[in-house]
Image 1: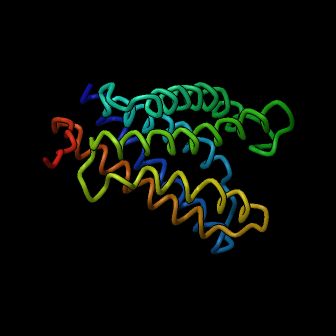
Image 2: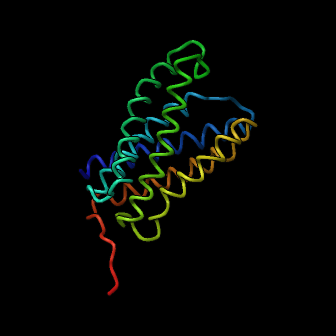
Image 3: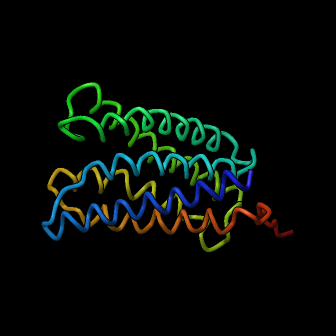
Length: 185
């Protein structure tokens, strides 16, 4: 299990870096590498699967729902990556790609919200990072979708940094035993 968690943390860090690079390049007016967002989705899905594994079955219903959404995001992203990278028109392709891309993104962020709730309740991450998955998931649901329509890339960069931080936390905690929340008497 720790190998899966460790690789998931690395994948999440790499996906976050891809978002930072993509957003930064657009803000600098250099180029738009939309494919990076799609490839990053696959890496983020691997990170969600690692976070779900880190829960070790203690996530309750939110953990199970988040895990299901993580696997759905991974499956959809596995279909989207080759299609977006090798298609002539890139990531702006028509149906069904735009539907699978949107569903993968929604599954990622909703899955992160559910896994964030589960991680917070189960206490499997260090105390100062327990709310990080939930904070990223909630903050990504509205701002990224709204600001993407006005082509403002700052939230992409900020969320990329947050995903990278979450990946580091997952990676660093891979060898540690999962924490149990302490109950005060």
